[in-house]
Image 1 (tube, helix red, strand yellow):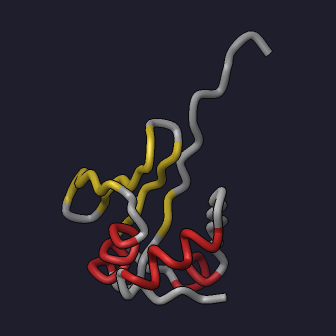
Image 2 (image 1 turned 60 degrees about the horizontal axis):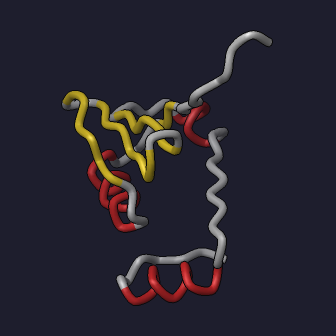
Length: 88
């Protein structure tokens, strides 16, 4: 390969766009509004995804996002203090 991959950004649909945006902001992602129906959420330049105000049940129900942190206990504590519901 004579080139380097710089980034990969998945597109994620949402049943409740406003609730989904609030959830990702609470996780600490920076929201960049691109249009009324789409925004970019990022932590740093090469860690981001697009959230769409679009819902297709079969697609959304089959979508998954894996978020890995370096200290799960600290993340749980920080998000619990902010009243973010943490599923285990």
